[in-house]
Length: 242
Image (cartoon, rainbow, N blue to C red):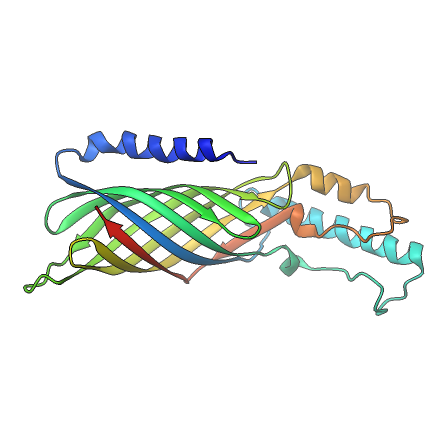
């Protein structure tokens, strides 16, 4: 499990390491709270997890068939467990993401770096976000300042309902928003491309050696392998400029 102290250390290290590179500009702290509806659909082409998709499906379906046979459940019976296809290995989660960071630059062009902590009911994501292009468009009356940012995020991904899994999530993201007054910001993001997932070798091995005479059906296959790709995910965030 990922310890809270380790998470804070990663965020602090990102912010400290990035500060010297942007120190010559106007530097300010930023903080966002966002909601990200993730839906990664599996494919054999997905790096890291893709090569295990077929293995997980085969192992689970073999375990289910043996379980139904051992307990005398006919195909289609309400008591029988059902076989799966690749869609069962999708990773769906709604992450609530905290993003403390720094932005620096001039009046119209800025650079943003963030530490990311995302939590859902069964998935956690920790990492960094980098936006080398952050265009600010001040309006003449100054109450609202629109901006447009482009960059990406790289996060370590972990399922909280299993032990021993590992994974990652990479996102190419474009965001548009507006700063209201001096300290409030509202942001709408579009993830042009996301790729990632988790893999648990111990879960896959235990599925392959599953005892069909067990009183419980095989554990869900997505505990062994889950993830894939996604495009067009829309997220929303509110933030504070320090």
